[in-house]
Image 1 (cartoon, protein in one colour):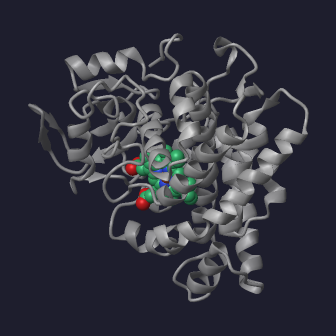
Image 2 (image 1 turned 180 degrees about the vertical axis):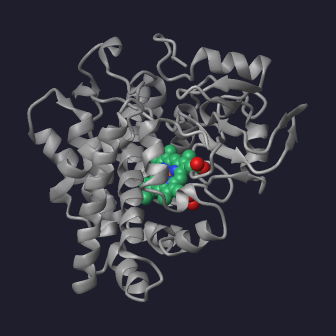
Length: 393
Ligand code: HEM
């Protein structure tokens, strides 16, 4: 469903139409199959918390978002595409470094990364593409450090990730990109086995591969997921969030002048709600017949939870179309809900708090160096954002 060109920050009008008239609707997917599209937040929450709903990407009825997503859900399958108990067994192996306390301890290092990149931008020519100069490097540097991936390889892994999160990539291109990343991560795991360091891949290698609990390939697949999820998502929130704020100058000014960690944390939540960058829906398949909202989802039916619509549901948020950095946006589902809720959310939150609390304060005159209609939005991405954001100051 296409977004309205004049409202690039809002979900497609057709999605909102369904929310009002048919909150549980049968829709046709890109591959010709049908699935249920769920647009009300309460229904999404009920279904995502229901054990009769599966995230197993190998089940025949699973509604993959694209050819590339199908590739990753089969060849590159790990715990995000599995049900419990296997999902929890594998997820537990990597949760430690994403725990709130561990992530909070990273805040000063993240602040240094953000300040360093801003220093470089200020010292360089303008206008500058904020995506390349800032939005992509911040989370890439952070996740590289956490995993133990050399940042020098960022061109390689960013280019291949880009193929995997593009809904229009061919099966061949997706297979090739996934294959290259797997070979790369497999080599890193082998290196960590031989010469461990203080990073997550070393923990996986020495704590789980060495003991035989996990194969090297399984560890590599997990590494690909973490590397990809760790930079693609947050990068889009940084660039799209900045563009949104530039288009709402009063709110940007209030945020910039506040110097209040609570207000900044609240602004992060509201921007997560408002933008809901995972815009191709959270996808599941029913394991049994489920009665919901006077409909019956049959066992084997695919289910797509449109969280971008759910986060603009007036039954969940007052005046949902309004960006209001002061509102209590708690309860948004930008990080999902239930057992698969985002593993990296504490990290994403700290990164975004540091970015939103620093960038506009340090560059108060930051502004768009083009017209909004010339900004290339990621309509073809599984994760919404902008490909480029020319800015000046
Ligand atoms: C603003 C940034 C982010 C957003 C909006 C986001 C969003 C999401 C959402 C909606 C899910 C649930 C998928 C589902 O239920 O089908 C998810 C899962 C996941 N996210 Fe994030 N994410 C972000 C950042 C990160 C970061 C920084 C990492 C770090 C590696 C990460 C790693 C993961 C992983 C591993 C899962 C799978 C969890 C599981 O299946 O148990 N994410 N994310």
